[in-house]
Length: 426
Ligand code: HEM
Image 1 (cartoon, rainbow, N blue to C red):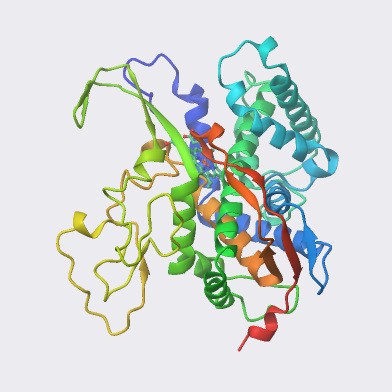
Image 2: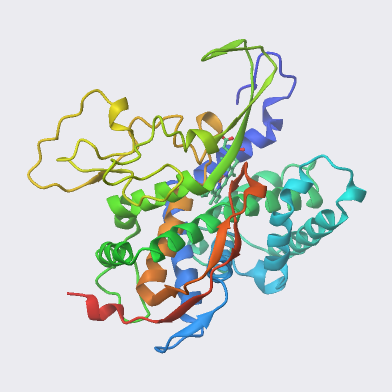
């Protein structure tokens, strides 16, 4: 293990953050990611099966609250195991109360001015602490691969953390609880609102919804029957249209402020920046810059602040297609291809499409996040008929810009009923 820099006084085995992040990245990739996807799919399917709707339409008050609950329970169970939510039934509500006040908590205001925010965070910490006391005091073999698919046990991310931290006497249980709450925030706070926006944007467009259903149907595994649906997640994640919808929702709704400390004097475009200074940059503008993003044609305009499901698709016969403004490309000729089948592309978007950050500290959960979001969309449109009720009143809550995926403000009531997806299977 190396030192972080030549001037660092931290001994390598005490680089706790660095070591844990490496373990987190490993536990969210390869075989562990495969297991996590299976765990998540199982939980989401089980919960969707319990949704209290039959074949007649019923009205629900708010699509965000509906999606958020299903996704939160499935994601938390898939990562922590089911014990946390079983033991702590109020954790979900407190978690969103905490998320809602995250700006206050990080604003630097003295505690007495933001008591409510501290109180709700404390409730979350107490829940996590109680769960940790139980789950990790059990006589468990944390290396046993036989339990890695069993949702009654934590997933590899928490197991790896445990293996490392159990030898680290400097971290007490309060410290572990804070660390775990941070991970749970990373797991849920961005991907869940983004799943909602993805579904919400599709539901507003009847034709797109039918296209999505057709693509999703092609990823259902042959053994699926009735409510027991299984997806080929790799196929879902490679599907050009679904990827484009996901990338477009992230472009519009993930608004981060990235921070970097400078280790050396740096020239960034026209700016000369000094060593040891901090740089902040917002993804809001880069992801909406009309001079670089493709905004369609005068006959078919697609402004940067509007959702365009096919913005990230390149059609071989159409040089005007793709995410980049055609004028910012060297004259692109139609590609040689027999069929005009589109492909998904992020080419040329380095530094422009950055919902997950970049460089060494790029989000390690980005692969799982994409799987979660596409599972969420796929299950919703397959198992249910859904219609937004006209007059819905919902927009992006701009008061939280800069803190990841923006949550919605207002509500979107909707109609829902069970769907016989098998009737559309050929
Ligand atoms: C749409 C969903 C998500 C978005 C937009 C997102 C975004 C981000 C961003 C912008 C960062 C900071 C990167 C940087 O500084 O350059 C980050 C870090 C992180 N994310 Fe995510 N994330 C998402 C989902 C997830 C999920 C599902 C997990 C866990 C399962 C996760 C775990 C983490 C962790 C552990 C870090 C800390 C990395 C570090 O400090 O180096 N994220 N995420």
